[in-house]
Length: 379
Image (cartoon, rainbow, N blue to C red; front, side, top):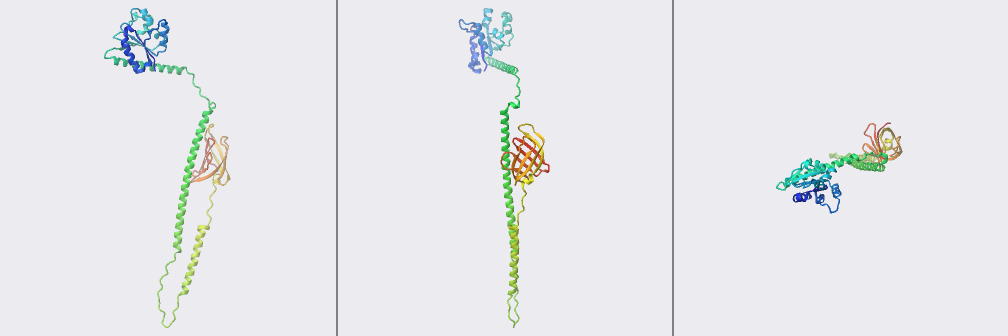
């Protein structure tokens, strides 16, 4: 908020100065506008009083009316704040009222000659008063903005140069960034694990449905093969007269015995296929992942990356491997493995172990202790 001081002579421009004061106070605030600095307390040193008021002001408005010069030029020099304002290089705006004109330099003291060359603002008390005061307000705002920009430029020029703090002197910032990176990596790992668990569950459900469909198809086929065909009707032939009738019981018994033997053979074969035949063993994931991998450290929160870094993956237990490297900031770790489609990945715990079997040779991505490595299998 600017501090605006209005200088005027009571016997010259008291009424219109009051109107100007009210309008400025309504726009900038009453605390920002001061007047009556020419009312010097009795016994006070007017020089110090005027200097103190001017030092506290941002802009000086000198209200110049027809009787502003007064009867004595020396009295004008002593009473007017324009003299110290010019000496202190304060923003000074002459305001001409009541059709007054700027005095001639010859009638002013030498110290006030520069006042004559300040661009003045005309304010009439008639119907153009609002327009003229609006123009004065805009002029004050431009001066305030220009002064603020100049002060800011001086502050920037006077400020000491900013020296970047070395990385070693910012442990708290480095620790915070490392913690944020660790949290992002953990969130990504959890999301990936959740995605892989969902994919594994979906594949298991699909495999279960396919097995159930195959079993039902096999049962349908077995029932179709074991259903006895209808025996063709035997034409009744009347025996010759005079000879006894023999039932065809021997043929029927033999046919039934043959059918029972065939059903027993088929049933035993189906039981061996469905139950007794052992399932093919699944390959151990640690055997698939074990080997030598060559690649690069693509990111490290504690320093720059590094090329030609070798990882060794060794099987330590079923579906469990132990990973070592020749990179000091990539510590060894153990990983229990699981499979999701064409990938073998680490289960639980911090860090990432992701082996992509779809690539040829297989591609491996490892993240541990804020360092990330990527490469391909060498053997």
